[in-house]
Length: 480
Image (cartoon, rainbow, N blue to C red; front, top):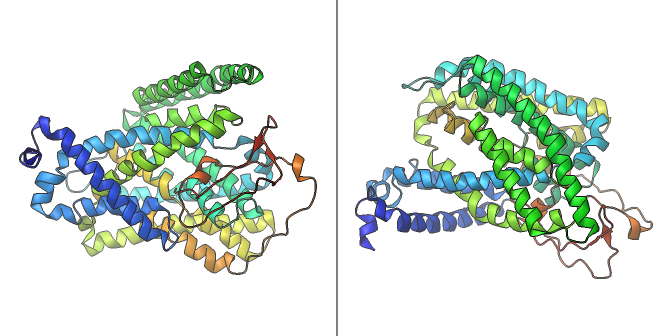
């Protein structure tokens, strides 16, 4: 047992050390998540903070800790395992993207979504010209200026769809008008930002010509997935539903093989495996037992075990000591100000024009659209893995993402929730009503404290597309 602390370079010691590190990280993550839940914050922030504590900002300054408990050579194991969780999470995110809900809201949501992607994107492009030279200091060299510009513009444009869904659910706004508008806008924004990020990854892997070829191949891949693969899965799923064999193991294995193949193709193409997993989730069936039974269980493993490792590894690579200079602190404030105002102002103004509701309503939409959280953190880690971002700029952007996420709930309560009065429920024949729960699996995990308990057995049935009775017994709300 003592041998695992002796020499971190010995390959024979990596497995027991990894198990010890896994135990330490999961315990620390749960402690930080519980503390942050007291102030209504998603536990993804706690996972990052846990990684910061383990990394060079705090405990990493202790030589014995760095040499024997968490040597830097062991960090790659967490990145590897965390990437598996990332692929599964992006698959679930695509699976939970309610295309029907977006289509119903597109007339009101599309102008708001376009404004909240174009203005931040343009602001990010302007900011990237200033940040490029700062990023390349201390011997670091970004692989391509175009890739860097596209990446910064994309990272400023994100709205975290899953974080937003959990916040709206915990505040009981998900089924309200503000919930429908912001969820639709966030979904559109994220799709556009992920596509831009994929293009940035393509340029980071080669020259402009190579990047252009990768973009063209990617377009062909998307068309192939949304036509042949999608309708093949739809046909097989419909056939199995008619035979009451929707959870056929061969069908489920085929879906997972499709997920792996899609992620693999995108990875070797140079646009990162997350994009392939996201596309695979979008084209899968959105109703029936396939969605309501299988993937909440899959997300339990993803959300409780794998993703915490991914974000803890992000925290390990966040060195707050690199910002001890007032110049870099000022750059961090500039990034935060540009990212926040470029997202808030267009959402605020366009919501007032399109929805014509109160100023408080418009301001609340702007606050919610500024939520970045999980999706932004994933994007930043991809930028670090592709060597687009230096560790110092990565730390600046991580701080921006955490602060914009942290401030959402307090500002939402201050501006909107204090005086919000929900509309009275409509009376009618509820037994035939069809209720659509966006981000269903997010409702089953962990945003702190808000709970929905004891749905009565006498309650009217909620039916899905196939008129299957659904009686959800959600115990907690989403983490992310």
